[in-house]
Length: 546
Image (tube, rainbow, N blue to C red; front, side, top):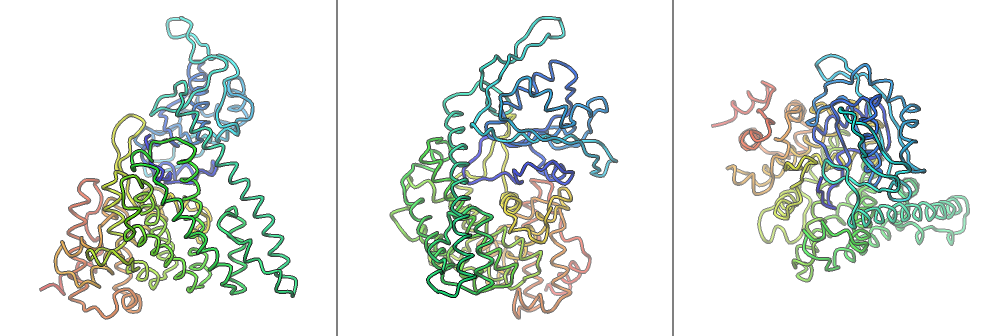
């Protein structure tokens, strides 16, 4: 699949092979660079054994998952009983050991799942990124075809990579990707080592009375995720805002430095495998993830000042790219990617706020002010980010089979949420259901619906055009239960007041009706939104419409 640096897989590449992970991957419903569906695979047949080894060796360049017993559109068909035994992890390793180079890592399991058509077996296989960056086949993949003719899928010493849905000999771009992945792992290892030094400093600061042990200088975005999260929790517990403020400013400066580099047009930035672009992309993700972690921890631990502080940094970064003419050139390709990345993370935070029922935070995010946007139009950050990302082609993906696929902001935000544990503290294993019942996706879509309501009500929208000026119904792509949150709001006066202040019944009903109409039109493209399902919501709208 062709992907942009702004995109993350809509699931965590965590190596888990649980039944929950199977459900999470089925919910994606399309093959991606990191995900391969196979309807059937009998490793007892030499041909399929060799082809599976070839595909696994190719996938080892970037890492990813394979589901067996699932059609290429995500339809669950079930694993053949005769094939099940081959996906026992010990047996699978034995089969792959013959072909894959030393150092590869594979995990596998077979689970019984039920997506509504009765229980069936599905095999899940995790192919980890090879520590050397790529796999070198140790022996040739020879087999006999149906006519008894000798064939060779690959030779000893070959290196393969995934090109769309095919596994083919690697090329220069694949080598650059392998180096990029290896360098990213090296940087993460350095961050982990740096985090250990910080933990020692933090321990000294919390056990010694001397103020000279204060760890402000060592708390920074370059720590590894686990060390950063632990340090942030400790600083919030002590209510020590100085290190956090210092880190936020340092992170903001780093984002400016990265985005200010003229790396080329957005299309070039997306396709360029050079180490300079790769390093900038990796560091941009890390910095934004650290900012997101501060906000998520503040939300979960009820430290609102730190949440607001961090959201202000996101808004200032967005405003800087809108107002600073020096980065508004076609050569600053990271700018639209930054806009989308900020939106992904704010949506992920919004989903967490919905699940924690922090309606004040939902309103705060919906109306987060970005200087420069309101001067040009009435747009909100969430409307502008969607528009600019779409114009830059950041939602236009290609499946391995060559067909086009339009990504969505909620699914990208779900990927961020799944990848960062601080974004789902309430759901340690978030992939417990599938498609419309996925709690992460439902909460993010609910957030999307609520911010449309908040923004349009705040504007006192009277037409669909007014609503579309400040929001877009991304939730309409999905047929899930995101509308339940509206029922809850109408039943809970305090929740309603928190979200829409003292807006009248007529105003709320009018805006809900407008949102419903827009969502119905947009949802037709995806067999998604079909209107509010709760009769109480329909009655409220009809009773308060002129």
